[in-house]
Amino acid sequence: MKAAVFKKQNEMAVIEVPKPKPGPGEVVLKVHNCGICGSDLHAVQYGMGLKADTVMGHEFCGEIHDLGEGVSGFKLGDRVTALPFISCGECDRCRADDGMHCERTRGLGLGQLPGGYAEFVMCGAASLLKLPDNVGSREGALVEPLSVGLHGVNRAGLKPGTGVVVMGAGPIGLSATAWARARGATVVVSELAPGRKELALKFGAAAVVNPRVENPARKIAELTGQLPEVVFECIGVKSTLASAIEMVGLRGKVVVLGVCMEPDTIVPLNCILKEIGIEFIVGYNRAEFQETIDALASGKINAKQMITDVIGIEEVPAMFDSLRNPGARAKVMVEFPH
Ligand SMILES: [Zn+2]
Ligand SMILES: [Zn+2]
Image (cartoon, helix red, strand yellow):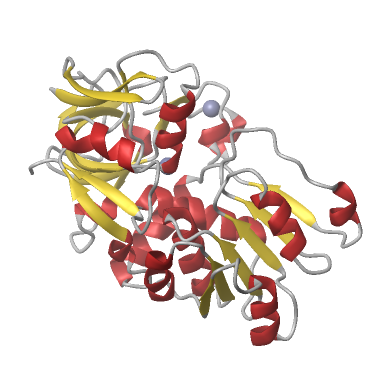
């Protein structure tokens, strides 16, 4: 089968790899869609110890193509998405729906197990969630990034009327915006790229400001009467954490969803004087995946509009190169014939 793989730092390729076979408790999906994630771009840019020919991709959706021994509750052809990891299912963390942090968990698409930039992908049956008929496969592949935003919003403890700044209108910033709105917060999005403004408004931002022209925190104060109670950092480059700290109001919270891969500097005094909290976020749980699927099915979140490009597997390496400067692009979706 064809797969898009990591070759070496800053180099992807499309190659033939063996089609997976499911072991006990596993299934093989015929992949319909797989989204390109900022983490994948980071991994290729920095190498991160990935071996040559690693199949990447952890935001996927497809139909069940092959069932391993002992799998029940699913049949061939069922359309599903999956938490992109296989955990032990037995430890305290797994039992508390925190399989992401199970000590024996193995992730898909970032080096441990092959991911979804391939015609077929092997997953754990325990990680699968069925998609209703009115949730398309492109949306199915958005459940993962939307669940990241939901997890951040859940950790922030938003209440109706909370003033929020979201830094960055990429897919994760848009997800955080949509969920913050769903919880009744007032959201100002801070974004430099003019092409992403419309998109952020569609996801429910009350205003989108260019932080070089206008202070997003002041904009929230204009709208809500006080500085932001929560700032979501969804960019993940050097100095954005310091900007988030600067913007948040007294006893507010900075929620870090952006993944900065380099040493970065903050001045603790700026946090101390305002007694702020900083929460670092990774992943999601099964309940958040299910809530996301329900929100897509009911139309509470119209996520499809974050897809700016749909490409075939052959175009993945060139797209990874162009995404070094994403411009107005948000989510790029790889699609397989289905
Ligand atoms: Zn991702
Ligand atoms: Zn476990």
